[in-house]
Image (cartoon, rainbow, N blue to C red):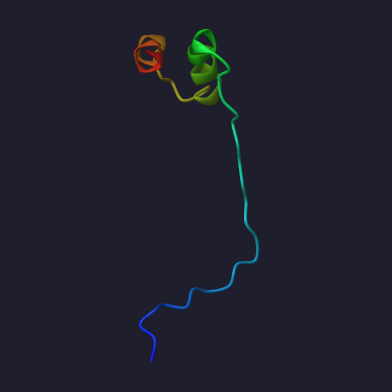
Length: 50
């Protein structure tokens, strides 16, 4: 007997990609884009972008 769990079959698989910044100057604008609408302060995005 196998101890492995047999997962339920999938009906679909969804893949998403945001791409990424192409250089250091693109990091903060990229973060602003992917976090748009979430109310994250610009200061925090700049800190994370460093």
